[in-house]
Image (cartoon, rainbow, N blue to C red; front, side, top):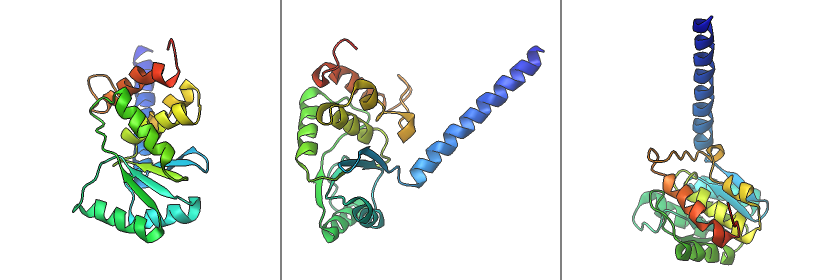
Length: 189
Protein backbone atom coordinates (compact mmCIF):
# COMPACT_ATOMS: atom_id res chain seq x y z
CA UNK A 1 0.00 0.00 0.00
CA UNK A 2 2.77 2.44 0.96
CA UNK A 3 4.72 1.55 -2.18
CA UNK A 4 1.66 2.10 -4.35
CA UNK A 5 1.08 5.52 -2.78
CA UNK A 6 4.73 6.43 -3.20
CA UNK A 7 4.62 5.34 -6.86
CA UNK A 8 1.45 7.39 -7.42
CA UNK A 9 3.01 10.43 -5.76
CA UNK A 10 6.17 10.05 -7.84
CA UNK A 11 4.11 9.71 -11.02
CA UNK A 12 2.11 12.84 -10.18
CA UNK A 13 5.27 14.77 -9.34
CA UNK A 14 6.87 13.64 -12.59
CA UNK A 15 3.79 14.63 -14.58
CA UNK A 16 3.70 18.05 -12.89
CA UNK A 17 7.40 18.60 -13.64
CA UNK A 18 6.90 17.54 -17.25
CA UNK A 19 3.93 19.91 -17.59
CA UNK A 20 6.00 22.76 -16.13
CA UNK A 21 8.89 22.06 -18.50
CA UNK A 22 6.50 21.94 -21.48
CA UNK A 23 5.02 25.27 -20.38
CA UNK A 24 8.44 26.90 -20.11
CA UNK A 25 9.54 25.58 -23.49
CA UNK A 26 6.28 26.73 -25.09
CA UNK A 27 6.41 30.29 -23.79
CA UNK A 28 10.01 30.72 -24.83
CA UNK A 29 9.42 29.11 -28.23
CA UNK A 30 6.61 31.59 -28.89
CA UNK A 31 8.52 34.69 -27.74
CA UNK A 32 6.85 34.87 -24.31
CA UNK A 33 4.55 37.63 -25.60
CA UNK A 34 1.77 38.69 -23.21
CA UNK A 35 -0.56 41.55 -22.44
CA UNK A 36 0.25 43.63 -19.35
CA UNK A 37 -2.44 46.31 -19.79
CA UNK A 38 -4.62 45.81 -22.90
CA UNK A 39 -3.95 48.41 -25.58
CA UNK A 40 -1.28 50.04 -23.42
CA UNK A 41 1.59 47.76 -22.37
CA UNK A 42 2.81 44.38 -23.61
CA UNK A 43 5.79 42.20 -22.70
CA UNK A 44 7.97 39.71 -24.51
CA UNK A 45 11.30 37.98 -24.78
CA UNK A 46 13.99 39.36 -27.10
CA UNK A 47 12.30 40.69 -30.22
CA UNK A 48 13.32 40.00 -33.81
CA UNK A 49 12.67 42.12 -36.88
CA UNK A 50 9.79 39.77 -37.80
CA UNK A 51 8.22 39.89 -34.34
CA UNK A 52 8.54 43.68 -34.21
CA UNK A 53 6.66 44.01 -37.51
CA UNK A 54 4.07 41.46 -36.36
CA UNK A 55 3.51 43.20 -33.00
CA UNK A 56 3.26 46.57 -34.74
CA UNK A 57 0.55 45.26 -37.09
CA UNK A 58 -1.37 43.29 -34.47
CA UNK A 59 -1.12 45.62 -31.46
CA UNK A 60 -0.05 49.00 -32.85
CA UNK A 61 3.19 49.01 -30.83
CA UNK A 62 4.46 52.60 -30.76
CA UNK A 63 7.53 52.10 -28.57
CA UNK A 64 9.90 49.38 -27.42
CA UNK A 65 11.72 49.38 -24.09
CA UNK A 66 14.78 47.12 -24.11
CA UNK A 67 15.78 46.17 -20.55
CA UNK A 68 19.03 44.54 -21.70
CA UNK A 69 20.69 47.93 -22.14
CA UNK A 70 22.31 49.38 -25.24
CA UNK A 71 24.67 47.00 -27.07
CA UNK A 72 25.80 48.78 -30.24
CA UNK A 73 27.51 46.33 -32.56
CA UNK A 74 25.66 43.27 -31.22
CA UNK A 75 23.68 41.65 -34.02
CA UNK A 76 20.47 41.35 -31.98
CA UNK A 77 20.64 44.97 -30.86
CA UNK A 78 21.43 46.49 -34.25
CA UNK A 79 18.67 44.41 -35.89
CA UNK A 80 16.22 45.58 -33.21
CA UNK A 81 17.11 49.24 -33.76
CA UNK A 82 16.78 48.91 -37.55
CA UNK A 83 13.46 47.10 -37.33
CA UNK A 84 12.04 49.61 -34.86
CA UNK A 85 13.13 52.50 -37.09
CA UNK A 86 11.70 50.78 -40.19
CA UNK A 87 8.35 50.45 -38.40
CA UNK A 88 8.41 54.00 -37.02
CA UNK A 89 8.62 52.72 -33.46
CA UNK A 90 10.35 54.71 -30.71
CA UNK A 91 13.14 52.68 -29.09
CA UNK A 92 14.55 53.11 -25.58
CA UNK A 93 17.12 51.22 -23.52
CA UNK A 94 17.23 50.73 -19.76
CA UNK A 95 19.86 48.35 -18.43
CA UNK A 96 18.76 45.99 -15.68
CA UNK A 97 20.32 42.80 -14.39
CA UNK A 98 18.05 40.03 -13.12
CA UNK A 99 20.75 39.11 -10.60
CA UNK A 100 20.96 42.57 -8.99
CA UNK A 101 18.40 44.25 -6.74
CA UNK A 102 16.66 47.38 -8.02
CA UNK A 103 16.39 50.26 -5.56
CA UNK A 104 13.68 52.88 -5.33
CA UNK A 105 15.50 55.58 -7.32
CA UNK A 106 16.22 53.17 -10.18
CA UNK A 107 12.64 51.87 -10.05
CA UNK A 108 11.31 55.45 -10.13
CA UNK A 109 13.50 56.21 -13.17
CA UNK A 110 12.20 53.08 -14.92
CA UNK A 111 8.57 53.91 -14.13
CA UNK A 112 9.03 57.48 -15.36
CA UNK A 113 10.52 56.17 -18.61
CA UNK A 114 7.66 53.68 -19.10
CA UNK A 115 5.08 56.41 -18.41
CA UNK A 116 6.69 58.76 -20.92
CA UNK A 117 7.11 56.36 -23.82
CA UNK A 118 4.41 56.40 -26.52
CA UNK A 119 1.74 53.74 -26.08
CA UNK A 120 1.24 50.94 -26.82
CA UNK A 121 4.58 50.03 -25.27
CA UNK A 122 6.39 46.71 -25.62
CA UNK A 123 8.81 45.86 -22.79
CA UNK A 124 11.38 43.11 -23.29
CA UNK A 125 14.55 41.54 -21.97
CA UNK A 126 16.25 38.36 -23.14
CA UNK A 127 13.64 35.83 -22.02
CA UNK A 128 10.79 38.14 -21.01
CA UNK A 129 10.63 36.54 -17.60
CA UNK A 130 12.63 38.27 -14.88
CA UNK A 131 13.59 41.86 -15.71
CA UNK A 132 10.49 42.23 -17.87
CA UNK A 133 8.44 40.73 -15.05
CA UNK A 134 9.70 43.30 -12.58
CA UNK A 135 9.13 46.18 -15.03
CA UNK A 136 5.59 44.92 -15.73
CA UNK A 137 4.92 44.58 -12.00
CA UNK A 138 6.14 48.13 -11.38
CA UNK A 139 4.00 49.49 -14.22
CA UNK A 140 0.94 47.64 -12.98
CA UNK A 141 1.39 48.83 -9.40
CA UNK A 142 2.61 52.39 -9.89
CA UNK A 143 0.92 53.47 -13.14
CA UNK A 144 -2.06 51.21 -13.76
CA UNK A 145 -3.16 51.15 -10.11
CA UNK A 146 -3.34 47.36 -9.94
CA UNK A 147 -3.59 45.59 -6.61
CA UNK A 148 -0.61 43.83 -5.08
CA UNK A 149 -1.56 40.32 -6.20
CA UNK A 150 -2.09 41.41 -9.79
CA UNK A 151 1.21 43.31 -9.87
CA UNK A 152 3.15 40.46 -8.26
CA UNK A 153 1.61 38.07 -10.78
CA UNK A 154 3.81 39.67 -13.44
CA UNK A 155 6.75 38.01 -11.67
CA UNK A 156 5.53 34.43 -11.87
CA UNK A 157 6.12 31.05 -13.44
CA UNK A 158 3.29 31.89 -15.85
CA UNK A 159 5.86 34.02 -17.72
CA UNK A 160 8.81 31.73 -17.03
CA UNK A 161 10.03 33.55 -13.91
CA UNK A 162 11.46 31.02 -11.50
CA UNK A 163 12.68 32.48 -8.25
CA UNK A 164 13.88 30.26 -5.47
CA UNK A 165 15.75 31.96 -2.63
CA UNK A 166 19.49 31.27 -2.81
CA UNK A 167 19.06 28.94 -5.82
CA UNK A 168 17.83 31.29 -8.53
CA UNK A 169 19.87 34.05 -10.14
CA UNK A 170 16.59 35.95 -10.63
CA UNK A 171 15.68 36.00 -6.93
CA UNK A 172 16.77 39.69 -6.66
CA UNK A 173 13.78 40.65 -8.83
CA UNK A 174 11.42 39.31 -6.14
CA UNK A 175 13.48 40.90 -3.39
CA UNK A 176 13.30 44.21 -5.24
CA UNK A 177 9.54 44.10 -5.55
CA UNK A 178 9.12 43.20 -1.88
CA UNK A 179 11.41 46.06 -0.80
CA UNK A 180 9.55 48.48 -3.11
CA UNK A 181 6.06 47.55 -1.86
CA UNK A 182 5.73 50.51 0.57
CA UNK A 183 6.74 52.92 -2.24
CA UNK A 184 4.18 51.22 -4.48
CA UNK A 185 1.46 51.77 -1.87
CA UNK A 186 1.27 48.22 -0.55
CA UNK A 187 1.66 48.95 3.14
CA UNK A 188 1.89 46.15 5.67
CA UNK A 189 2.44 43.33 3.22
